[in-house]
Image 1 (tube, rainbow, N blue to C red):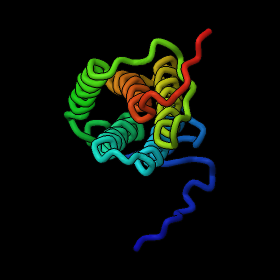
Image 2 (image 1 turned 90 degrees about the vertical axis):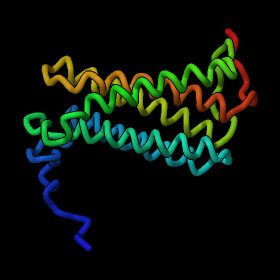
Image 3 (image 1 turned 180 degrees about the horizontal axis):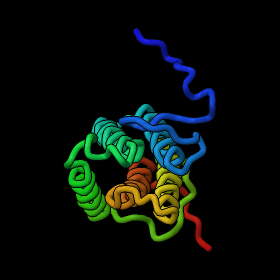
Image 4 (image 1 turned 30 degrees about the vertical axis):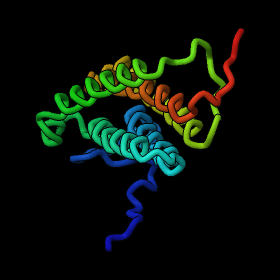
Amino acid sequence: MPRIYTRTGDDGTTGLLYGGRIPKDDLVAEAYGTTDEAVAVMGLARAHTSDPSMHEEILTLQRELFVVGADLATNPTQRDKLSPRVSLVIADMTDRLERRIDELVAERPLPDAFVVAGANPASAALDVARATVRRAERAVAALGRTGREPNPEVGRYLNRLSDLLFVLARWEADESEPASRG
């Protein structure tokens, strides 16, 4: 088994897929690191759900988020090595998210008020995952403003994923969250 530690990051840099190094606090590292955080929190939600179909849906989302993270973590000059179809794959994933959101909302409309998250551990973890994905989306948007254009499909995917996570959290809570009326 290879060693877990390499010591290459001791200088405050991190490696990109297919070569190159960037500072650990670079916006690229922030964007793909935040997607990694979202995968972890989604794992917590998956561990807490008792619904087998929700378990599988979250696992699918985690795997999709790995694709997005890999796209973000790839050296832009070597992006063609990742997959010539990666943009199409992410676009297809985004379309699937939109269809899924529409299905869920058609079956069970969302509350007509803000909700106080935390009805149960799974719904709370899905809400934390949603907020984490929103942070990743902000990092991707900031990248675009610096002239380092990320794959535009990544921003679309993250936006729809946060919407779906919101809907899934409401499904997992199932009427047990108190509404906030202002």
